[in-house]
Image 1: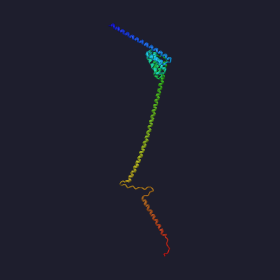
Image 2: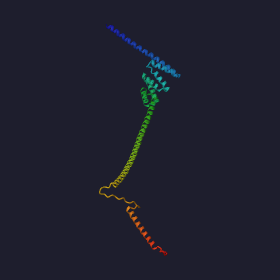
Image 3: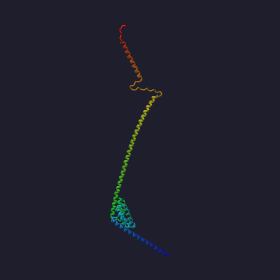
Image 4: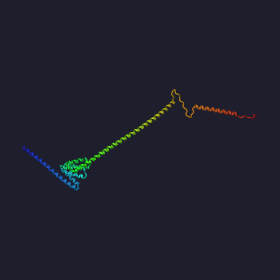
Length: 281
């Protein structure tokens, strides 16, 4: 029984080892085919046949995910055609597939270049730093990192200045708005004061008129209906107008004067009458 069990274990591990070896061979074969397709892609790209090169690179990537050169070269092809979004995706894929620090360095370096084209300097700085971690001696990457830092600083200074200017403008706008509101409030208060003065004046005039009308009404009522115990008020003569008594006295005086004149005339008639000398026959 023990011999049978031992035999089965030997067969199992032998099969497992054979499967693993077969899997390794299959991967090596796929990697080799992928590298051949990558070489074809490089050849087509050198002949300016971008479409054929793109097809070869895609086939190479599909054949073996371990071939970091295929996505890296395809990323370079996209980068040279200014298709930066596609280029970034392929460089990232190459960095994940890279088995050596040298390949990782190249992938992150080119990722930094894509961020520089996008003017995303903060991410470019991080990509160049990651590239230098894998190859600290690369002077080109070091130069690009310094340039990205300088551009990032300028960009941040510009944003800070714009924010300061915006804050100053906002403060000035708010200050002007407060001034306008204060001025508008003063104008409203002035208009209201004038209106109140006018209303008070109108009320005063109305009150005066009411008082006048009231006085007149009271006088009329008093003339019409004297109170008990009060003497009726005699209407005063107007200037250049004689009273009734004066008119009667004047008429009487005129009559007396006229009578006197008539008596004098009659007296003269008697004294001056001619005497007749004729005889009576």
